[in-house]
Amino acid sequence: MKIFIKNNLKIYLIFLILVALVTLITQNCILLYNKSVFFDNSIPDITDKFENILQHECNVDKESTQQDLCLGKLSQLDNEIRLNQFEFHDECQECLIHNNQKLIVYHHTFWQINDKLESPGYNFKYRVLLLNIMSYFSTQNLCCTKLFFWKLPHFPTKVIQILNKKFHKFIKKDLFEIQDFDLISLCNISKSMNKSVIYKYPLCKMDHVISQNNLVSLSDLVRFVVLDIYGGIYTDGDVIYMKQTNFLWRKNFAYRWSYTNYINTAVLGINKNLDDNINKLYDLVFKKSKSLKEIIRNLHPFSLSLLDLNDDYKNPILKIYHSFLFDPAWLCFDGKVKHLNKEAICGFQEFNNEKKIDEKKFNPDDFFGGSFTYHLHLVNCGNNIRNDSYFQYFENYFEKNLRLD
Image 1 (tube, helix red, strand yellow):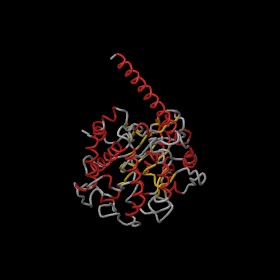
Image 2 (cartoon, rainbow, N blue to C red):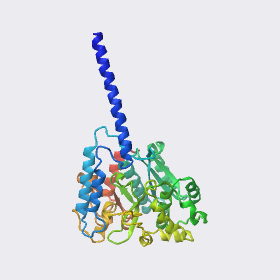
Image 3 (cartoon, helix red, strand yellow):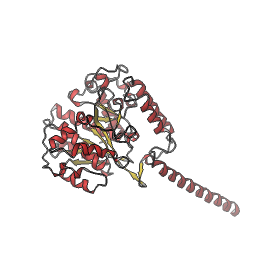
Image 4 (tube, rainbow, N blue to C red):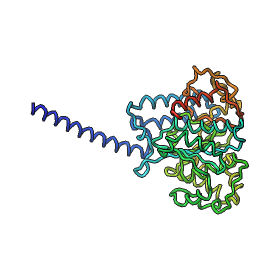
């Protein structure tokens, strides 16, 4: 009996040693792998497939690019990722590694509500903001990301109280921060950030009086300041996340403004740790601008589109994606593509008001499946939210998924 136990003990010890060795080798492989690719090491060809789809089915330069083929291919890729993820899949393995440390990708949004308390406009904009935040926490890899909500000091106190209560569990885990957009403070922070350049420009020597007027344009300044300091991905407050954005972490990017030759920055990504060529854009905009008003004007997508953003053909300062990936209803709204099907959105008001949706048929994965985000375009969708709308069903879905109070 003693010999039997002794032999089994040896086998068990050998087994533990083998497990430890396999774990060590796997971790080192993941570390080395993540220096070039940020996905699970069981599917190393996924990024190549994504790039291939961008070149063919989702080519931003071809007017013949079809929405159903583009998003269909991206949906297939999403399904392949799900199939390749094991039951005990560790999401932290997908994080970017920089200087042998996990790199947190910061996400940012900016929003303002100036409408009268409890007015239709107030309630609608408040629910839009909640939808943005809930969609982020429902879709993103929280092991690798953190969300900042940026606001001006006069933002409604009541809404802040609701956000603090509703998202308390994320705030407690340091996954969510509510911050004032204070240029003086941010300019000082910029000085201590390794890759940040904002503090060098005249912007940080100006009188920083920010008016409540023209807040849409002000958001153009907000996104470029916070992304210079913290990096990451910015979304407008009326954008909802549809899936993980880890395909996008490695490049500075924007997307095409519908069918025009302009770029759009409603979703904007900047990662200076991997590519600091974006500083050339900052120089072009911030160096010569003599006033805050001029800076904001020069940061409008129309103005940015007139800049020469390509360092050379192989290394563009901004990677420009097709609008199908972030704003999939836009080309239909502009009359450039046909409806995908009778359930698909074409007019922006259809998301919240004009289209009746059968709740039994609602499936978030079928709503422009393959796209990273959906842009509501607040100015085009009114203030009403019907109970049988996509807006309401997404709201219900995210709240249930997150188990919010």
